[in-house]
Amino acid sequence: MFKRVTASLTFLVLLAIGISYGIKEPETENKSDAAAIPVSLDQGPEVGSKAPDFELPTLDGQMIRLSDLKGKKIMVNFWTTWCPPCKAEMPDMQKFYTEEGNQIKILAVNIDTDYDVAGFVKEMKINFPILLDNDEKVMKQYRILTIPTTFFIDESGTIQNKFIGAMSIDKMRELTQEL
Image 1 (tube, rainbow, N blue to C red):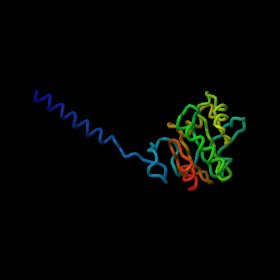
Image 2 (cartoon, rainbow, N blue to C red):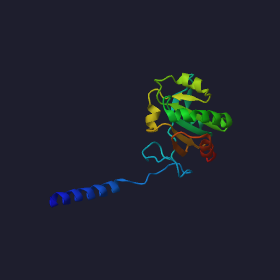
Image 3 (cartoon, helix red, strand yellow):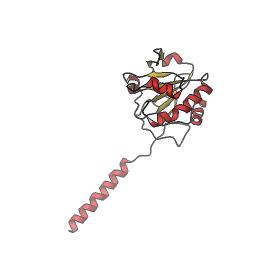
Image 4 (cartoon, rainbow, N blue to C red):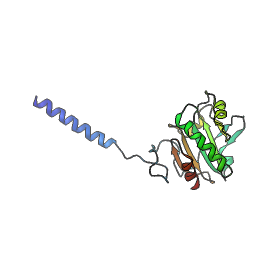
């Protein structure tokens, strides 16, 4: 009996030590917000790196290439129609676009085009560019694991901030002011 108790306690101690070594402090990539959602460093391009270039069609068939927007401030948002946090932030994104559309370009990249994206856009009364990642190439290029995920890119094409989760209009203003 004593051997079993000793073996069980030894096992539990070793398990606790192993777990404690496996737990790390989460890192954030939003340089302006210490309370940002923790992200894994392998989750997409890092803050400070050049934004990977891409070209995607809009809902009306126009092609937009990220590199053609160099010299402008850009907000690239990855989303889907069925994602509750994505739906929640869309009214604020539209309001932000109405206020700041001349100062910052919003590119909302839909990564699940099997759903009625055009119907969603019409229902939400969105008039900023909606890009369609039909083959999920850009989603894979940016290693999107969580939606919504938004990248804030400065005029030189460098990612200045990354935000994971639904944003309020105040957060959009804050993160684009730093560009």
